[in-house]
Length: 490
Image (tube, rainbow, N blue to C red; front, side, top):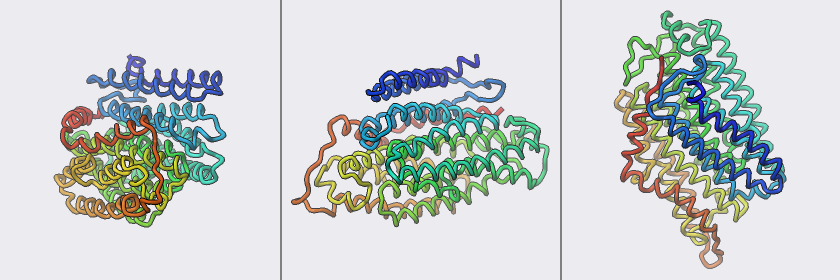
């Protein structure tokens, strides 16, 4: 039974081994490894969808939990991995580099396996191992174009900050194990339920573990690696880190709080009451406000589009932390729905960055002057994506923020919701800077038109069209999210 529920991960592990052999045999044709990786992700996604039909179970002696919540994030992670793989087929920085891109795909599969395990992990050791499986691959992917100086710098900074975060996390886990005598989140919950009042050791352990998770989701003050890594890494890696690894981090954060710190005696299916040993709502509320504010304010001053999107990613992390903070099913549904819209918006924006960088050889905002004269279709696509990221109607970002902010208001956190709305207004300033450069700067008479090929434009608009039209009929996604916001907390 355990193995039958573990089918998607098994398929991906087998695909990883086969990808290694394909890369060795077809060294001079690395795209074959890429096509195999794409097929592997699609097949694994189909298996994950087939396994998600109302299945809930505890597997491998409590190491992993299979439930609708984990299925949702696995499918989201695989969708992001599929899009990232397609990114690489048109990435000059990867295809024209000295390194064989075949190894990139192998590392991508390894990172995806770690993220899928993380979404189901319900044991502290399993959480740590899944984090490390994900992180070790991502460190190399961040610095894959090692001939580029800023790429090597990004990878080194990522490793240093990541090592510190891993150390903090494992130390917090060891403290929690010492306090409760178990690594299983459900047993930890039952032990902590017998404690009254704030326990300094429990608070310290919780904060240290949260620090390790906050590092992965780019929450302030653990965000320092994000701008440099996003700017220096290949665009495909940056897009993956900005959405998919963040999704895995939020999945484990929600499960860690829900399984380890929720008072099962007083909580209901719709509202969680956390144990008195640690005030998670207060902590998450402060971090959410600081994260969204710092991300948006610093993004205003950026002149590099990738770096600007990095600070934007930090701000969006703050928005989603609000949904986790309210500890309600409606809040979780808001976070999960927002991740769907965020995946489309952010991947689309980074794909435009990659396409333009292929032509102009730069991510600098000034090099985007007059893009509308060079290619009006890509300028319109980027405008839709940026306006959606601000949360402006009638685009997907608006409905995403609507379903994210409403539960915050309903839970009585009106002040934090107002701060979130004000931060969304601030974000307009730096997104509009890009739109201004594309439409209002540059000379139409001296600008040469550029083309990107039909496959690239079709793939781009496959992400843009849902962003533009999702507001018309979001019901199927909302139903999926509502059915998936069910955690097997035991």
